[in-house]
Image (cartoon, rainbow, N blue to C red; front, side, top):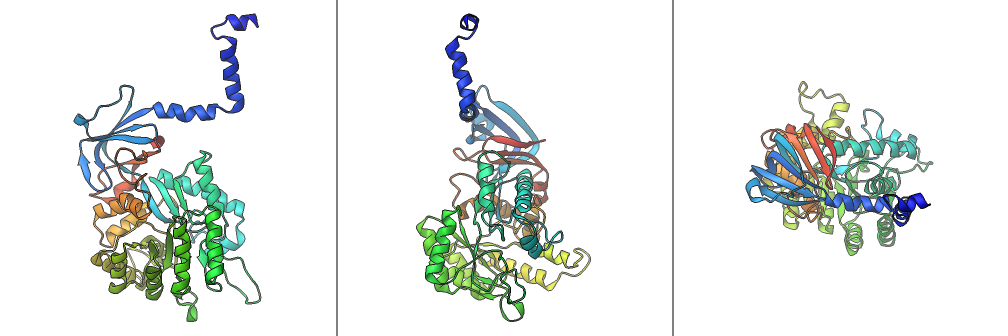
Length: 435
């Protein structure tokens, strides 16, 4: 004891350090230390979410951007680490708008077999890999639109990411999604009641209860299937009435949440628009009138081009060799019409149908289908941040926002595929990938 008292540290200091370790105070101290770190990023150019700038630098302190602009006009913290990014473009982390982390590509295992035959443990383990793959591909925020039979596993994945247990994007989750009774899969012999890929609900009281229950279990948004393939001979047809859809929107809005609608038919889209949803995903049946309604009400379209592209190839289409299937031609036409009318376009490819980490595939198709490259970059960053109501936190390179930043080799406004060559991934000031 005497030696300890006379040592370089007295007993009280040693006891404090020991108690801190035992009590887990170290976990509390670490973020405070992180707040003191400063990093200066020096790329060839910066896309701020709207505009490309040459000669900019970006200063990050702790988990936030504290300065961004011409190097000559910025005072750099004395102890800041400098990261040179020659020839590279720095931009906000991508915001994926339509993902399914609990699914993997259908050419590996069909959707039905995943829902019915894969255990919740296996599906959750796969999801851990899926969120990491998207983060490494430059996606720092992700809106996940339904667990497809995996219950509330998305809430667990989101919590694990937030606690630092696993790496992944910031998650916006919809949990189980809502479908009308008798409309969704899997289906089989009529005498059997099979587990469904979403939660069934009908009518005012039931929809109020289910919407509130999903919110109470962690859903950030509510997803509803405004139509599905339950029409004659399996054709797509509207499911909920406009009044039922309004009920879901009203309950969600009372908690400050948005509703996203799966809708591919003209009537399903119309009902969802009238009900007041925030985004319509797929939108294949959009007409000039329907798209004009979306413009008037500020409803964004998430076209999910890559899902149809992938499914067509799974079905035997040899892209680049065979003529484009009718499904692809119709999608090109509806997307072109949406652009012509001026519909706000959301980036979201329905990833899970195709491999996680291949998020840029949707952006490449958006350009291929006629969207301006700079507009595509905006959609994937500041655009989605605005549509999702999170532009006060992410989506742009400006002081005060989270330091969710990526760097890619080359200039993605000249070639969108430059987004595939990710050299740096930073989320909340922490570097997850650096080459």
